[in-house]
Amino acid sequence: MDIIHRILKYSSKHIGKAVFAVICLMLNIGINLISPQISKIIVNDVIKGGLRDLLLPLLLLLLFASVIKAAVIYLRSRYFEQFSQDCLYDLRNHMYTHLQGLPYSFYDKNRVGELMSRMTGDLEGIRVFLAVGISTLLENAVYFIGTTAIVLTMNFELGIVTMAATPFIAWCAYRFNKIVKPVFSEIREQQAVLNTVTQENISGVRVVKAFAREAFEIRKFEKENLLNQEKNIEASRTWAKYFPIMDFLSSICLVAVIWYGGSMVAAGRIDLGTVVAFNGYLWMLIMPMNMLGWMINLAAQAITSGQRVFEILDTGSSIREKEDPYRPEECRGEVTFDHVSFAYRDQKILKDLNFHVSAGSTIAIMGATGSGKTSIINLIGRFYDVTSGSVKVDGVDVRDWSMQSLRSQLGIIMQETFLFSDTIEGNILYGNPGATREDVERAARIANAHEFIMEMPMGYETIIGERGMGLSGGQKQRIAIARAIVRNPRILIMDDCTSAVDMETEHEIQEALKEVMKNRTTFIIAHRVSSVRNADQIIIIDDGQIIEHGDHESLMEKRGRYYEMVKLQYKDIDTPEFQRQVI
Image (cartoon, rainbow, N blue to C red; front, top):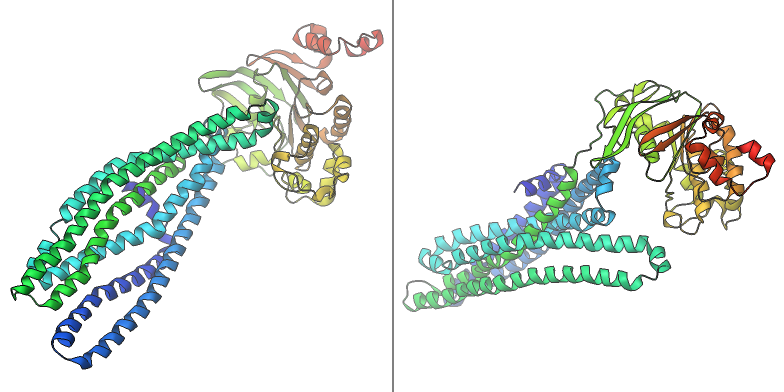
């Protein structure tokens, strides 16, 4: 009931549509409850009593009631659907907005396919309950209560006989609900797994084909699909086990009315019109009992879906903003790491880092894969929080900053390039939606992307595929560089952003970036010495610790790890003059 209550909370803004739909529903029920009484009058007064003048008015009354009923059924269906869609719109927006506010750590633990399942299949399960389940539940409850009151008033004895089977039907419905609820929960979980397998395969289809693993992926999908089939069949078995019993018990009511009511008519204890009316009311008793299992089925699915949706909505962000965060009018770009340590999933990533980056200067970070380089820049933008120590921008702890203000000062070129299914201009403008076409072209020229863009069929208006499909790795990286440049950030972060371009293109990009980097704090994460040698300071990270710190010349004089990196990368160029310049 807590889940149902939470689902209904989203209806408060749209209660007017629901109330109007309920009024139409009540009118329809009222007409149906009156109809058997008209049949009773026709049998007793017209057929048996000979009052034939009443027949035409009564038939016209039934016809008019049918027209009214058709109209209210249409309005009821329309407004309940509108009500459910409005509620779902709010719930979907709330969920999507909540997902946008969750930190990197949440997405590290949750698969995309499962989140998509909750955003689609689970929300649809809730919508069906709002559109159909609530109206059907209310309709059948009113039918059952109203019909019970009428038949007991008309003839208490025959009413009791007619309803003799209802306690047994209720018990079957209770048993069905108890068994089917966990089954539906398992079905939803398995559907999420199936979605994840599908999404991962489609996203990584090029890897699958490159390694000729199509057969393996097909077997993996068939395995999960088979589990999904088995769980749905298990739910069907439960349905098949209980529904025939409930249908049989409902049919007993019909037998009871004909047998006991007929015997009462034969004995002169009741008139024929009353038995005919009882027969008309019978379906209004049987229908709610027959629908009980279906309604429980629908409610069980909605509850299961609601649990999965609210599990996401109840996930609070581990990164919270202060009530009155720091929002400066301008940012200088000074960055300080003060005894910073960072652990993720009980694994220590960074250990007691201390360094200072003056505003407008350039710092390069080098180290082996997995040494913690990317974690450093993730802490600057507060995508994760430090375990101990503090990261400061302009002398203010990033935990005191408004996250919007902080991240608006950053231009990040990520190691893994992600582009959207949009035009090239749209992807570059993602960094700064207010930029002009001239700003976009200037950023593209700096990133050495303008020429290849102009060679495309529609230039900057060329639509690229999902994740940049159709572009080479180097082209994607250059568009990502342009996206960061057009943002005009105070702090520019380049996470190995030229790894997919050749040495000549890298040199051209670096020369162009020199102008951009002036008076701008720049972090460069790279493996190539050519990318970092001109930095104001270079730090070498190993196992989350700084093992060397200095500029190119001072680090070369130390003959330590940096010196070995330089010698290794330039070992094939053994010209004495070149060696003197570089080493």
